[in-house]
Image 1 (cartoon, rainbow, N blue to C red):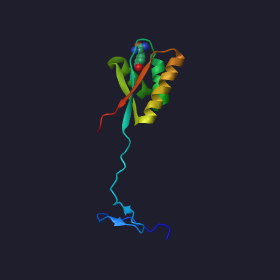
Image 2 (tube, rainbow, N blue to C red):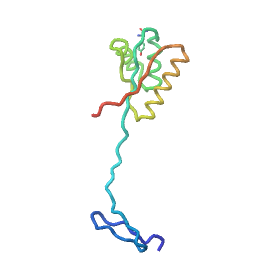
Image 3 (cartoon, rainbow, N blue to C red):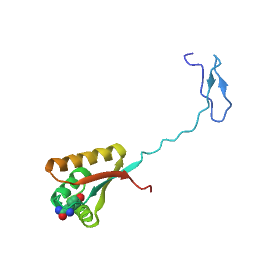
Image 4 (cartoon, protein in one colour):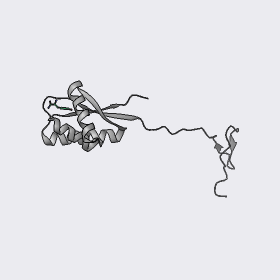
Length: 118
Ligand code: TYC
């Protein structure tokens, strides 16, 4: 037999294998869904509104009307959440937005923060 040590059924006492190795009981494990992070755009006095609408459409898959509403919320309230993603995707989006703004010469700022738990 290739592997004589069989895993024990739940709640059974520890077994010893043929070579006296201890076979540990299974421990119930649950896979947790990934934590979520929100990508937030910040207001400034210089980035053109049209550029912000474009960025929101392009990187956060919003239609033009929704992107315009989000841009106006940022403009009026100082910031707004543009999307919620697993950590790596949120960081990548923020880097892409920041790079595009930098390349275009705009001071648009983008931050990633943990999304509030539901
Ligand atoms: N306040 C900017 C202006 O009046 C527009 C703007 C909106 C800039 C949203 C940044 O994240 C931003 N041109």
